[in-house]
Figure 1 (spheres, rainbow, N blue to C red):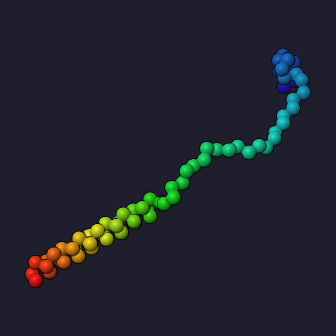
Figure 2: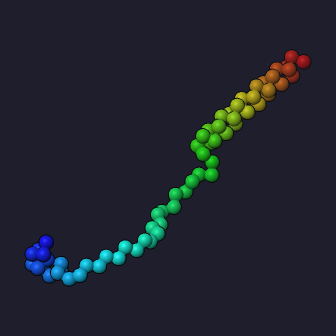
Figure 3: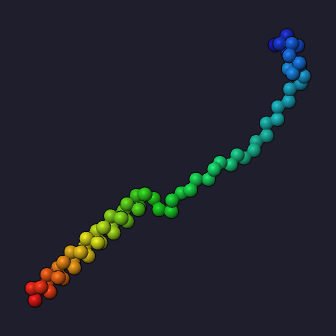
Length: 67
């Protein structure tokens, strides 16, 4: 190794390595306020509510027609 250092002048001097620990900040990730599962459940609930409302209105209309 000394022979290689003698041939290359940049390797012949003292070598200093400064290893300073620094914090590396990564790009922030935006998290949804609602999870996809919760959104799906809410959509299913809303669809069920709409179906119930439609059935109730249909029953109400039939009652009015028969009376």
